[in-house]
Image (tube, rainbow, N blue to C red; front, side, top):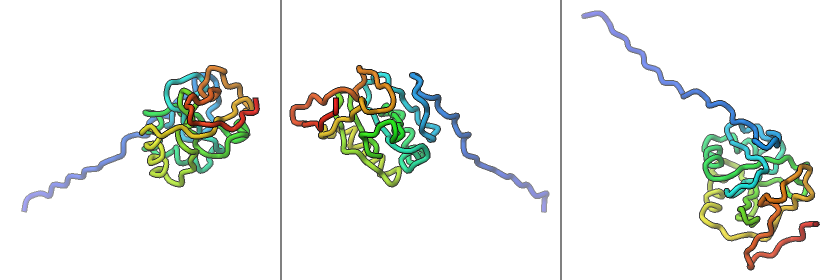
Length: 164
C-alpha cells in the first residue's frame, strides 16, 4: 500500500458583521440588537416599525434574529423606544405609515417567525387601524414633521384622543 493521504476540509461560518451605527439624529441606541439599523426620528417614507420594549427585553431579543434584522433593515424604518419614553404605547411593535396610519394591530411576537408573518401582513397593505400614538407625551422630542404626529387620512379610521 502506498502512503496515506489525508485531507481535512473545514467549513466555518462567515464572520459576524459589525454592529450598525446608532441613529444619525442623536437618538440613543436603546436596543441591544446589534445588526438592526435603528432609525432616529427624522421623517421617512418607509413604514415605521416602532419597538416599545426594555433594552434586552423579549422584543429586543427577537430583533437579534438575523432574518428579523434583515427584514427590518430592508423594508422598514425601525425605531426602538424604552417604555418610559413612550408612556402612551403598551410594550409591542407598532407599524405606522408615512400618513400616520397604524398599518397593523400592535404585535407582541413570541418568535422570529411570528414577527416575520405579521411584518409580511403589513407589507401586503393591511388596512389602517384605529389608534394613533401620542408623541406629545413622550420623553423625547419628536419633530413635528414626523409621521408619528400625523392623523391617519383614511376616512374609515377613527382615532383615540391624542391628548393634545
